[in-house]
Image 1 (cartoon, rainbow, N blue to C red):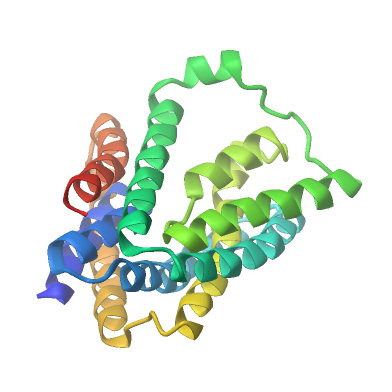
Image 2 (image 1 turned 60 degrees about the horizontal axis):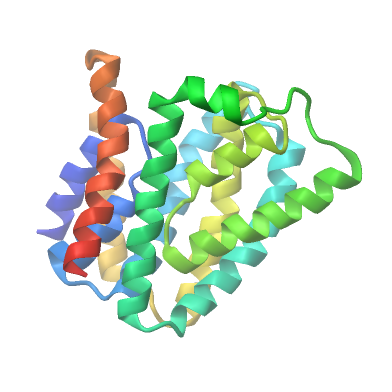
Amino acid sequence: MLFFSMLLLGAFIGFVGAGGAGVTITLLTVGFGVPIHTALAVALASMVFTMISGAVSHFREHEVVVKTGAIIGLGGMVGAFLGANTSNIMPASTLSFMTALMICMSALILYVKLYQGDWLDRHIHIRKELLSGRKLWIYGLLAGIINGFLSGAFGIGAAAFIQISLLVIFGVPLLKSIGTCMMIILPISAAGGLGYLFNGRLDFTIFLQTLSGLMIGAWFGAKGTHLAPMPILKFCIVAMPTIGGIIMMLFR
């Protein structure tokens, strides 16, 4: 039953073209009663494999700022491992609430980005050139540690937070920010997943069913993305984490 549920969720994620870590965590915990620590471990470990193809594809298209991504990713690995170990000692109820809150915050950022572009342009300065030199290392490692910690502790990819950081702080162009974000999430999810694994939180049976269902479903779902009108896709991208976060908040 878990595999088929993830198959359907994967198809929807692939159709929408957005990350679904938050919804995956909600389905595992609320739908199947999986302990929150195990659900976070499974979500992070699955993310390693679901991000590989996208990151490689963007790299081949030269849509990745490699140096920026590598520096942030390095800090992200440290932060994610620390986050996973912090999560390990948190009470389940507190962790569930914080995870639901993070999912809702991600949804809010996506809403502002997709529906309030004019407001963003007026209130947030987008850096016009790539950050370089010592500032790149300092800001990159700090941003990586912070975003990595959030991902490791609460099992989400933090893509919305990372992409905003790339645009505003590091001057990565919008087109390249997507591929660079995927590059950063790879080491973050790997380090976070290892942190949970070392603490005995990763259930391999649940992990394999989740991963296989999501990957197969996403492959089929992606075939229909071009058939959907853009307003529907935008709505689904925001609605997915919003609904997931609210359900988790109410039924944790």
